[in-house]
Image (tube, rainbow over the protein chains, first blue to last red):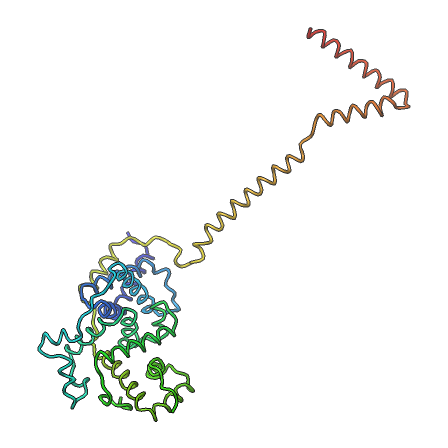
Length: 190
Length: 165
């Protein structure tokens, strides 16, 4: 028979799982670019969080703490593997007979109008997959999920200044990758 | 014209992460620099592009599996996670206790050693005192008594020696 503390602990876990499950899974999916790996990563992160629940500082946001655990597992896993596959940003769209290069050839419309839905989702994932892990992480946190620089620094275990410079380099690389050109999205537009 | 803005500064401007004076200076530069405007627009487009990705949701099966694992798992062992200082406190306290007990033992041994009675030296001192003070005493009664005691002791010793023989 389970103790009262243990039951309340499980209830708390269920609540946190319901509240932050999607965010954690999305982070894991964008990091790995793979559904099965994302499931494993999310599961491992939640189990470690459950086991270490006493160590959680209530003054800090739970999602940042969970994100730190998840990111650490991801980094450890990468160290063991030693490398990550890099793929062409156009690979997914090429399978569908469309490429970003084709889209860019149509200069009459902004690129962001040309791709949408699943196509856009796949293109973004391909672009993320080509970024170095630190850059990918910071882009997912700051640009995709709207995490503050401070919380991103907490998750990545680095100073805020490092988050800022990594994000700048990541955006510059994405910009080159996507071949955005002057005037496509003009200065001053939303 | 001022120096061109760095990607770092333009990216931070995009997120509102520059100080007020830095942001004003960067905006002033952008107003007159086409190259930096292009860079800024490109960085913003990159940020917008990433936002096009869909928000993935946790598969229902995964949430259920996690809940099942938690329900089946025993209560996690206490690992001092709530008190990080306790990890150091326990070995430190053990070491301090051991050091204290050791010090106490050494101190006690020294104290005992200093309190040990050197019996040979004490006997020698007593005999010297007897010879120099008691036997030489001017008090005839005392002298007689001491002399008698001395001769009786000598006699006793002789008897003991002869019995031994």
